[in-house]
Amino acid sequence: MDSKNQKWIYLGILALVWGSSFILMKKALIGLTPIQLGALRILIAAIFLLLIGHKSIKEIQRKHWRYIAYTAILGTFIPVFLFAYAVSGIDSSIASILNSLTPFNTLIFGASFFGFTFKKQQLIGILIGLIGTIILILKGADLNPNQNYWFSILIIVASIGYAFNVNIVKKHLHDISALSIVAGNFLLLIIPALLVLSMTDFFATFQMNQTSINSLGYITILAIVGTGLAKVLYNKMVHLATPIFASSVTYLIPIVAVFWGILDGEKLSFIQLFAAVIILLGVYLVNKKK
Image: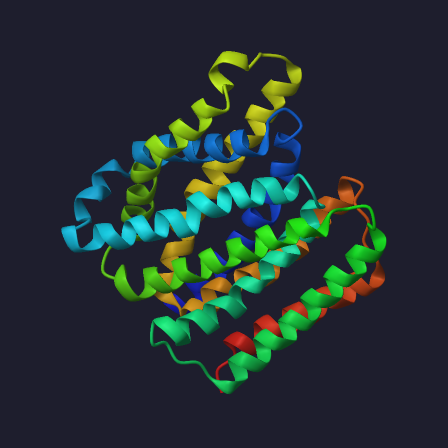
């Protein structure tokens, strides 16, 4: 299979996986605090990735470790906790929609700090996608006036971290495998995540009951599939495509997340469905070749 077809397959899989991550976070928060959710997500993903990818760490050279650390912090550690807190304050579908700012930030920071160029058509596509995102946000605010939209800032900050992450991977880590990058990321994050979890008194206060067992089940699926395997696929896609293409997955994530939100009782209007179509148009323009 050629790289053109592969990148689209990766895009679709990641949209399904990450789009489902928001409802998993929402469900896991029933029995866990946001900070516990974030720390456990990192720890479980780290154990899984090091089991399957510990040999790949040998590929990482001394020159890579600085950038592995940057991507670990900006692309995983900080966003994991920011998303956990955000989903505790606003609907999971709205959080996923706000994450659609990532391609815009990827383009801006890629051009400003990493020397990447972009076409006028890509900028138009991103702006169209952002229009769709704004419509979704505003309509969501109308449907859910009691939610605290200050939590939206957390998603915006996380999207900036993702933007730096994808540009760093493309420019400085293109010569090592996707599995090596992710395994290196989580090797560095194990101790910080353990420290954070211990500060919450999790080990002393956690009680095994049906609610906590369900929460651990949700977080395990989220960590292994939504964090571990998905990050390997994402870095493979970054190697095959442009940073803008890779980050455009965040335009598709809300469609999946909103679907799960509806099933869980979250509200969605026809206008929001129309906005999702606008978002898809933006993704098409970002990736269309003249």
